[in-house]
Amino acid sequence: MGPSQSHAFTAPRSTASLPWLCLCPLLASLPIAIGIAAHEEARRRLDRVSKALQAFNKRDQRRIIKAIGPETCLDMVELKHKGEEDLENAIPLSENDALLMCRWLAIRDAPKLRHPVPPLILHQARILADTLAEFSRATYKSLLALRSPLRVRFLADYTVVDMGGVHKEFLTSVTAALMSITPELLETTQGQTAMTVSPMPTILAEALGGQLRLLGFCTAKAFVERVPIGICLSTPLLAILVGRPLTIDILAAQDSVMAHSLGAIQDMSADDLECMDLTMSAETPRGVVVPLGQHSVDTPVTTSNVQEYVQLMIKHHLTFGREHGIREMTVGFRMGCDHHVVNRIVSLGLPLATIQAAIRGASTLDVDDWREHTSYQGFEATDEQVVWFWEWLSSSSQETRRSLLMFVTGMWTVPRDGFASLQSAFTIRMSYHSTDHLPVAHVCFNWLDLPRYESKEALQTALQTALTHKEDGLTRA
Picture 1 (cartoon, rainbow, N blue to C red):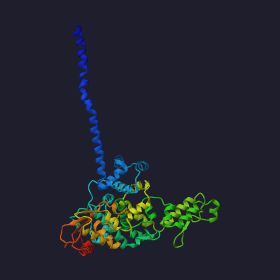
Picture 2 (cartoon, one colour):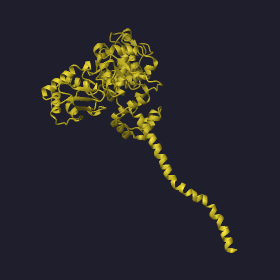
Picture 3 (spheres, rainbow, N blue to C red):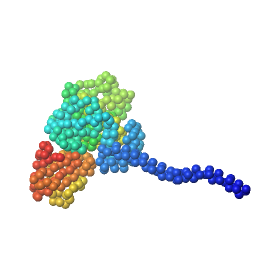
């Protein structure tokens, strides 16, 4: 009985432990399951980041993720209204990466429309008139769509899908047409190096309102889509467009003498201000005294209102006679890019000079930089056709170089950092057509198809002929 009792007593204990023994394999596999789930979640998160970055090429995607990390990328995708202070602390960006991020924010925050809006369809020969007509009859839905990545199609190019080349040429060509057809829109300032809105009466500003709005729109798109359009806007005008306050430092970029005087006035003592006998008024270019703000012309400037006086004087000096024109251009800028998108980037410390350079692009085209960042398909850098090409380009004028760049890329100039910053590398490809054919440009991809010409003279003649006839579309694909 003893042994059998002992055996009967221990049997239930063994039976009770069976469920736990059955769970052992499951418990052993639990870390693996958790690891698989974590891997799948990480993959899904990275997929969402990749989807948000799909508007960029692979090189720019890697730069963004490397600069701010995939987790911060995901935050930027999912937290659309994240505070600017948090954004500033979370993302220490370089200037070039900030420009990339601005384009990403503009694409991410563009209105999500149920049905895609068709592209702008324009005649290339009358691009400015057609564009102004399209803008004048735009609906609310189509105006919202303009904040999305721009889609353009020229009537001669119905068979061509816009992969980025057509809209680049659109921005460049429209801006050039505005500057040549209506030069009264802007005037030079800052030592003839920058441009601002010309002084104009209200009636003229209303008559030119469409052109000013279109210029503001092209400026915004040039910034957020990284397509330099070759115009240098003055620092004060750019500050107004992106919502920055006008300060003495900004005034100094346009008028250093006035900035120095106002800086001295705001530091004066009460006795010095009384001796100056200043009032809250300013004189117009025609010699008419006008009040500043809501004050009368007889209100004296004292220590209690001297800061307000300085701010009003800065605004008067920079915008008097230009208010209506600046307002129209600002409306166009907001059509191309939401204010909060640009303001987020500016809040990260991106200088106005960097935004200015991004819109203007490089002032000259350096052939050595061009050659260094050129790729080849079918050719080698030592092939005689390639050598002849660079010899011809090196001896050409800046005007010819810009014409060739426009022919191949749809832009008159390159980004401020040179050819390395092109979204697609400038590429010379071997064309298998006979030498009777002209070179052909693929603007969407920055490709130049070059036949194997038998002499340097034949290559140069073919290039000059292609540039001469680029407007008829016979040498562009």
